[in-house]
Structure formats: structure tokens, C-alpha cells
Length: 354
Image 1: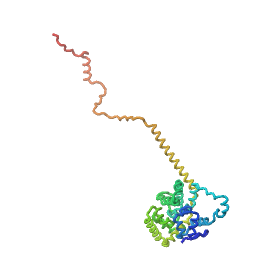
Image 2: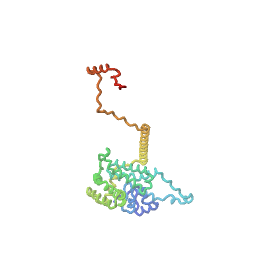
Image 3: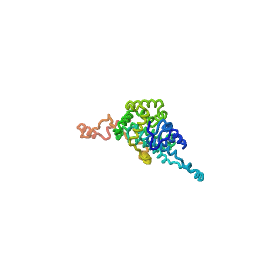
Image 4: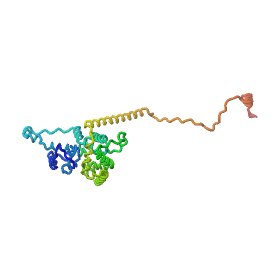
């Protein structure tokens, strides 16, 4: 069983559920605020699992704030004389995005590190997922589980096979300093990506089996089969992790010991917006180039068809003209004879009139 947070003692499971209901908050809303899965909140409130790490600290502080009396209870006379308390102003899209990022990003970077085993790739995958979420914020904000939406995109990005072709990710990163952490991370990276993702979601994040199956796009029996084989493979390499509760604690410790930090929310939003502006301008420039080339082609193209001139061909069967030159003796005699004859030619034979 995991260690409880000593700085802010947690109340019993029944009190945790009562405090949440006192603020008319559902498990999904509380999970989105803490950046965890709804099944994790259910496990905390049932006592099946105690929160630990950054999520447990945030959960304890939130429950402590729920336990404190609100202003209307502390000063009821003032409320009755001044009227009802003003409703808080709704959050802007940027404020809502920053709140989701602040609660989800730190834990999501550590979870993604368990999938890929690379610190920089885990941070890049989480930031890329949140940039896509900011681009589709109206859709993500209305989603039933915004944290799950971002988690799915981050996991897909971290497990993409195309990273192996990038020069910066061709060489392995330094392993964890603790030998036990190295053995566990090595055992995780030896699993197939689908098995590794199922194990991290179920034993690391705390999703139940149907939610794990839905997020991995598999049936519940297939997800259970992957989970069983993944646990067996990890236990074969690290025998002391055959216990599921110990495996959950060791996964949390492995992710928490690494120095994994995410960028600030405004930075993520700004980078995403700049990238959108760049690609928008590039698309506009490409379209203008195509339109200009098409216009130039239409202006310079001929308006009617001109058949090409056929190439010259040699004609066979025509005698070669004789070259001019001096006359031979026979030709000279013939010429003289023709010149000596009467110009009128030989006498005509006239009919006799008699």
C-alpha cells in the first residue's frame, strides 16, 4: 500500500466522498480538476487505493479547502443584509486551458516517461498534446474527460514509431541512477507498445479495465489479456514485482524520482499559436504561388492551334540533273545542223488544186 501524504493528512474514504458531495462536485469534475482519471477518484473514495505523489498532495489540499467553512457560513448576517453572494465570473478559454494544464501536465509527463523511457520525448509529447488541445479547445472543453483526451494524444505521440528516424532520438538516454528503477524501466520498454500502454493505464494511472480498454481501443477481454501478459513479463524480469500493489507503488516512485518538468501554460499556448500562424501563412503563400503561375500560363498560352511544320524529306526516283559543261563534238555538229536548217522548217506538202 502506498504512503499517505504527511503534510496534509487525508480524511477517511467516507469523509472524502462527503466533502466532494458537499461542494456538489461529481467524480468526473474532481478528476478533471486534479488531472487524474475518474476511476482513480473512485478508488480513493472507496479506500481501495491511497493517493500518493503530486496528485495525492493536490487531493489533500483540495479536501482541506472543502472542509473549511465558506464565507456565507461564517457571516450569515452579512449575507442576509447584503443579498446573495455574487456568482464567480466564468473562466476565459485561456484560463480554463491553463487550469487543465497546471493540474494534468506534471503527472502526464511522468506517465509518458514510463511509456517511452525518454525524458525529453515525454515532455515534447505532452506539450504537443496540449497544443492540439488548444487548437481544438471548444471540442476539448465540452469533452466528458478533457484530461483523458489529452492523455490519449500524448501517449500516441510518445509511442509513434517515427521518432526512431529523428537524429536526437537515435541514441539511448542515461538510465535512472537506482538499479531497481533501471530494471523496472528496462522491463517496461521490453513490452510491446500496446501491452506497455495497458499496464501504465491500469497500474500506473489507476483506470479500471473498461476505461483502459476504451482508451487503448480494444475490447475488455483483450485489455485483460494484455494486462495479464504484461504483468507476467515484468514479474519474469523483476520477480519482486509480482504483487500488483507493489507494482503500482514502484511505477509511481519511478516516475516521481526523475526530474521531469513541463513548460508553463502560456508558453505552450504561444508556441501553438505561432505554429498555427506559420502554417497558415505558408498555406496562403503556396496558394498565391499556384494562382500566379496559373494566371501567367493563361496569359502567355496561344489562343489558337498552329500545326507544326513537318520536317523535310528526301524524294526518291528523280534523276539527278546533269551539270552544265562544254558540248561534245557530236553535240556541236547537231547544233550546227539545226542552225543551218530553214527557220520555217521543211517545205510543206501542199495539195494539188487540179
